[in-house]
Length: 452
Image 1 (cartoon, rainbow, N blue to C red):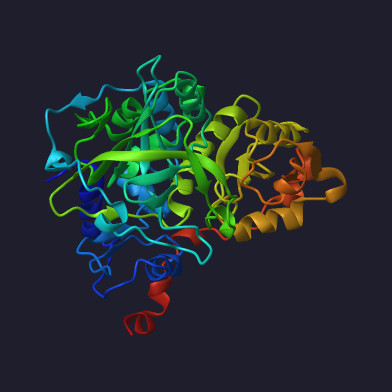
Image 2 (image 1 turned 180 degrees about the horizontal axis):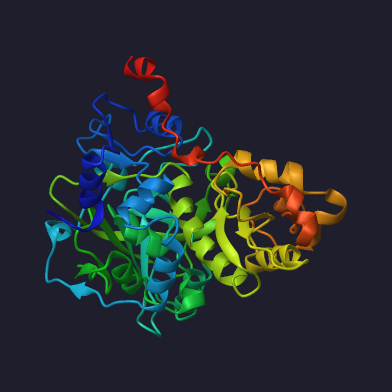
């Protein structure tokens, strides 16, 4: 029984009843993505029949919080501490001479679209896209591995465009361009929750090897094999690995592409990669992610860890939620135990300054469920007064992924203090409680209806 990467995840999802299997043929152009979107990218689906291909496709594996916690052996209460421990205490990986991903090695006549069921999701997308590929790079100075999820436009044949958005990736490519040398790259498909979570940690901030963070997260060494044509290591139990180079001074127009928040991203020249070799398992499973819920949920989990760490130095923070509806980056709700006046305002300032992408934050008390939109709205409705509890920071640095930011190149940020007053004034803000309400089993009162 495999313990790492996609097949282990599919087995776990199936055993827990969380995997939906589609036996009907689907078209990779629009139809496959439409099915995933119907379930809000929260229900893992295995498509057994994809039009024009013999290869099954797995999607929406990482879009549900509770499934993520379950697979990672975490809970809502301990997730932040487990992630912080993994970043603080990375663990060694294990190198294998060969692994399942080396079962097939292709080095000639590489045509990615012919080989793999790469979907097209939206009407105006410039091409088909690999949306779930984890890009692997190595820092030539530190030899540490950098991994991140990047969208990859299919240009035809063995060529893709790489949206190298992270500062580290941009720096590495620029440095190699100055030397007029190519940057080696690998793209991993068919991974699991642990590798995805590790890929969202900022190497630039923490200075860690993300593979080693993954080993710490999964509680055992991540097993790796050497690529065949580039000096990089990849997970031994991955389904597919694309190996290649990003040649210097070669760019092509990339985009538009429908992604974060349901808008099309920008169009511009981006580096290309030439795929020189493909490794894949026998009977591989292709992995997709409908833009962009899955990657961004994992990214939001890391942002929650970072926001919690920033707030705990200022206030008695209970929990934080970087919301899915806010793109897992623009909106956050934090619950605190406010012990003196002004702490909620300090929390707002700290939160908005913690990450340039965070645009709106709501601070509530610890009696509010920050994962319930109804509960948060209730707190705003009953504990917030705009004249004294609203904090606005105009003209701040924002995210280029926010279309409204693009209007001026800057973002107005806002914080809402939806906490009750401290001291005697706060006593009238305690919620009315029904003793024993949480233990009531409603089935007991309507047994006949429940059996129907």
